[in-house]
Length: 168
Image (cartoon, rainbow, N blue to C red):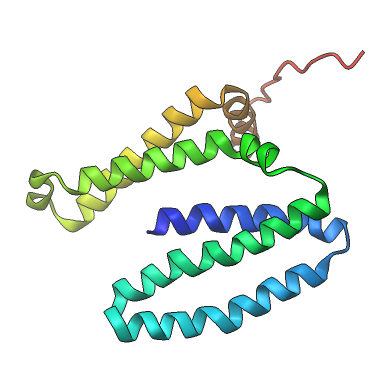
């Protein structure tokens, strides 16, 4: 559930800077106000119906629906088609989907219950990270190369010069 929320949250974060450049703060205000009004009501309904699971389900259902509205208007404002938007997000979305499926399957392994809860969390997180990186590396090699370059800057390694196409 949290992986689905994280994917949706990343998309929302991605859309705000170009909207600010286009001076469409009204879309951001409307989206944020809707979040402030709709989400607490949904959380209350979810908690009343099914406690924590209900809140989680409301979070995963309502948040993406509101995000679809924001995405529709942001893409229209930016002049980007849904196809192009999806094409640019494909490697990350595939990696997150595979990671989510694999971590959900790992949690179902019967021997995992013999391990402490903290060790389960660490093992599942490490497996999820490994799967995400592996899928991202195979489905989006250029993106992976750029992320590796940024990580080297952050970690203080020597700058890695990625060959760029000659603009001439």
